[in-house]
Image (cartoon, helix red, strand yellow):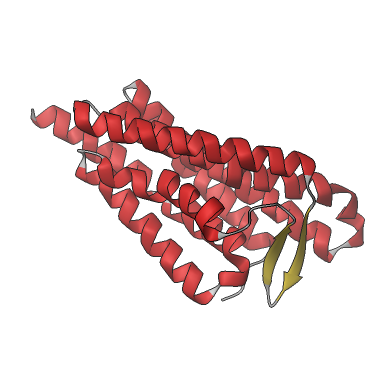
Length: 217
């Protein structure tokens, strides 16, 4: 499977259209927050398109550093906070809300550490075997200290929702992570974000289903 600048830009345009449709269908504040996810993924994928251009064409090399850091900013600061927050805003059951607040707290702490690391340590990227490999010179690179808290916030939190449609989002995120980790471990940041971006198109379906449930009631 090959990825490229055109693949990133096409994904960005497609997600922008899906996200815009989700915004139009949204009727509540939680739905608007959820529908922002594919739109923000569209921006992130477009940024990775710029990373591809900067790595493959010297004419775009001057755009490369900021494109890398902005892409990683989305990956490591936005998603650990936005995903559990979006799930929490839908939740009304007290016990589930407490669990989701914990996941949001984990996401905030994870994003704070990763944001500090992005500002103070080097991050680079290179093209290898048709993928982008990001090299992060951060301290505490172990899965226990960095990867697990990130996964708890971004992929596990949806399982604690009382809405089956939001739990579906958790299943596809975890499934795509396992697939990416098994096949593309060296390129996990890039490839999982790409799959996550495409899978976020499910949010339009989720919002439509949630609104239908309200109408039935």
